[in-house]
Length: 357
Image (cartoon, rainbow, N blue to C red; front, side, top):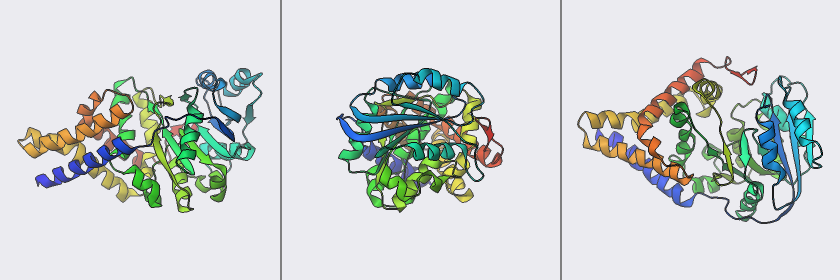
């Protein structure tokens, strides 16, 4: 049965190596003449307002840019702080969002309202906890244009400080670096192969209009992936890119936040309950079983463990991390299996930003 461990380990190693060499990165910077609308859905983000706006004030190489912030019925001081920190900035606009209508989730409704106010040829949506380098938007848009893409998702560097973050957060990038050959996915026109991340998402307005903007994903908690699928299904081309040199974010700061964050969405990540079972099996075969086999005397088990650990190291070093956390991959896999199960058990009960999802 050693082949049950060897084949998956060899496969993900080959995929990860291919992506390591070929993944797109926004290195080039040019002056952007097109009108750009950068939109920010904001709900209970008072701790992020100052840092976010500071990272935007000096964005370079943008001839025509507008920054639109929507206060999504926040229960803290988000609106007040937005008005305070954007005062006197001529191309910064704060919108007070309307009540969440039936059938929508909060983020997609906020994005739709922002889209209706935006005037740019290119729409850039950014989460409130993302911090951008001074040329981030220019470099992202340049890559979109040079690659002749309709949408682009520059994946920010995921900052992790606590052990719970270090065990879970690197799995986000590793999951697609080791399972999808990105350049093939970019051209295959198959929605099921789409990889996207809504933390930093660049899309041509014309492509977004063709799918009905964010109404096409109004009830999808994984709005980024489903939006990417809708775009591809409608004939658009796009991909995820290595955005670690232009953006960073700390999604969660403790296990409680990780549990809530993944609990609200993981059940939808794999398409169905059967898809989740396949994901759990994959995590066990690639992340846990090799170590068990190695400890019990299987050389193939150790080879498989080494191969998977190497994929984690490559995934980490590609975004400037040291990769040592990869040796804890069996623990990470076990925790992610728990989070998948937890997400299914807690559907419709998880609280996020003061709303039940």
